[in-house]
Length: 222
Image (cartoon, rainbow, N blue to C red; front, side):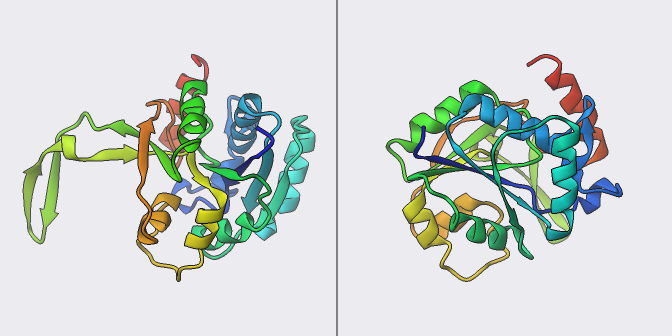
């Protein structure tokens, strides 16, 4: 997997968490969430190139956390931009692999099976992303009205999302759009078909305080 670059996006500051530090630095079972994420991915692909995007003002704090928690995994840190789009576009210039896997820094619970499905999918697909099915009933808001919809027609999308680097860099030459909520939406807007593979339900994105409790529950069982 020497031709694989793994880009971990951690450029946010976590306003919804209401903490004094970015959410990726909050402790999960005694260690920063971002360190959990980096160590998990490194355990799956120790020969990959690792790049992390971080807010410029928090790069020094990250170095101190790595020292404090004995995390010596080799990686490059890139200053994040105003939007996630800008951060990823900047980081892609530093990727050396033919394939790139992009993962949220606050998803520390991706499974080995999901990761391996990602690597298998990217062998034959330019763009591949993990999904999980929706179990709850859903309704669509239309002005002041709402209507039931078929949940089987919708999916929850996760990371890691996997791409051929050349085509992804070309897609990121587009102008930014608020509708670019992930890398797959950028690729889709440039005309690429998005392939789906099964994710893992435990792969939660930690965005609120209650998510840490759920992640700790899962972490102790993985």
